[in-house]
Image 1 (tube, one colour):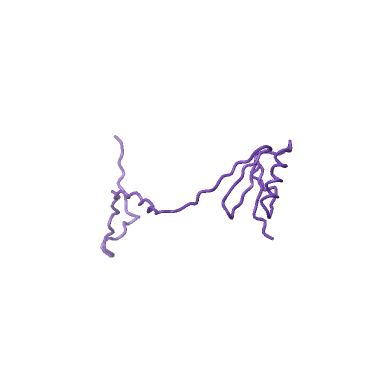
Image 2 (cartoon, one colour):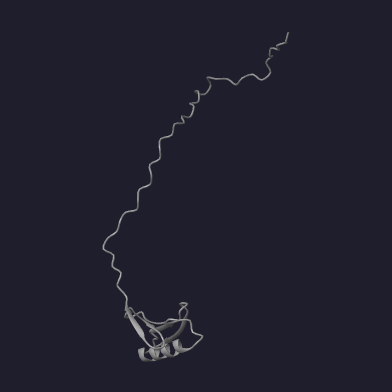
Length: 112
């Protein structure tokens, strides 16, 4: 048995499921008349895409619009990255530059 009618309280919490409209409708009116109930009670029929908003003395029918996609748009292109101003130094060809000697004598300057 398929329970196609879903009943929600005012907080959006599912409080009941029913196979038939009359049972769901009657129960929703009784539930909404209770003092502890957070309202409004909603009865949803997802197969027919309808929602009834029920209070103790009246109800309102809302028919859902079908969402239709007529087209799409392309995602925005990324922002262009500005060219870099840093130019890495070019390395000399191998074997043309020798390492600097580390043990050479340094001149000492004396203050007068």
